[in-house]
Length: 467
Image (tube, rainbow, N blue to C red):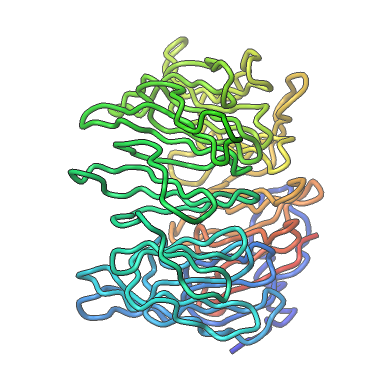
């Protein structure tokens, strides 16, 4: 059932929020899309639809199970996509064409369940009865494992078995425009091998063996993996071209040795990684490079790092003892530039989607009252950081130019957060008692926000237009 909060009630609620002295009069409290307890809120790639789990209840011998619901972000009656969906990562996901897939009614012994697919304007469709995992592709393709086989289905089409996919336990499509699928599968003796189907057909290429992790570059041109992993040791970082020109090397090239975590830049084929990695302290020497280029070494004793969307900037946390122990947040405006230290007590950081700013939390209160949120330009001459908000538990930047932020403020109850939007240089209160981690800025431009309210009088899924 959909309800609307009266203007008076909304004003009273919003006036009770404290988004810091920088806050401005509230614009609105949002529109309720669905009423009642909810979890696992997500948005379609174009931001037109929202999906969430509701009506969760314990099932004897199977753990909690929920209803998967979807509704237009603009409002409308929710559609029940599937029943018996577990509130766990990987239980449901969007594909690039806006379709929604889920594993329902899973058998706890085998892990198999019904693979259900919903597309806007249509009815939910059961694609497989005994699927154990799935992933969606950029054009709406779906790959899944059922009864030990790996299959691929085009939008609305029948599943087709991919040869050589037996034993697959992790799968991923390459981003567009590439047409490829990679899988970690159990090879001879049970050790994991990395397989690559170029063109989504035919026998796979064995890219690497003893693989611990893998990821495609955002343009779909490269596949990177940590291979040759042995008990008690780290593996080697290798890259392989996804669609190599005829007559060129198609096999893997070793980039670095003893590598722990690695990431691609969100919008460019540039890698960063921790080499000489010590898993006991989760630290290593930070390096980055584009495939085929010589690596740039940025610093040692690094525990966390992130590349700017275009790959031309790098932020990282480096642990130092000079002047007393500190976790320095450092920023390199370009791959080889000397870093600038921004703070000695970094908590969390992220580049804005357009790469113009680095956002970070620092100065955290030991009592759990959150941290201060700062923003600094990611390029150009060093500038003093701009303080945006206090008591911040988490934040997210809008797609596009990143001019809007969602800011979650810590509450003393520890069970919920107060939600604000930062837009036009001011904080605007949105709601109190919001489920932590539920708030989203909707694609494509982040002009709308969605969240899950937990207050008894305001429980459910909400959407608001942002200033």
